[in-house]
Image (tube, rainbow, N blue to C red; front, side, top):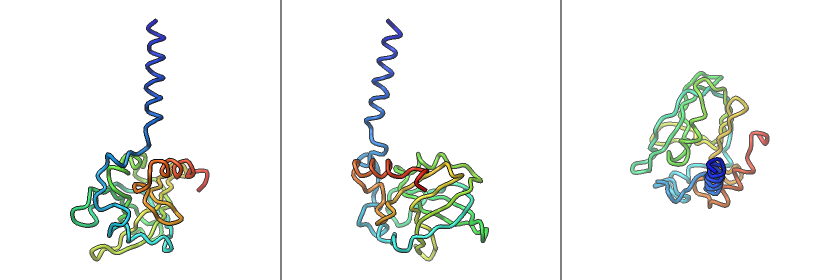
Length: 166
């Protein structure tokens, strides 16, 4: 009897987990990261490029005053050995995914360069580390940030973007 109860409880628990969206944007603080915000206008998809780097660490960022907390990463460019600040996105949306990265991971970083308050930063589209860890935060076609997508569109993007596609 106890075994049957445990099995049913486990199935219900995992069913609820599967029904939850990967990121519930309604429950997140996205102030300043919205679709038409000053920050989002900095990402110009036609300027997208990539570089090779070594992952160093995550850092808190606040691109503009009064924005919701954001998270960036520091990477070391493999060619120049310079440390580069890469803006990833709002902390509520990206922190869980970034936890898979480890210091020293070898990565390809995709996105666009832009200047904020006199400092050049890289606004991330995606990062592929060790050929096994993919974190994508924007649509490649138009640069739309995933945290601004509807739950249905986000689920489709996540399904369509796998390591095998890279």
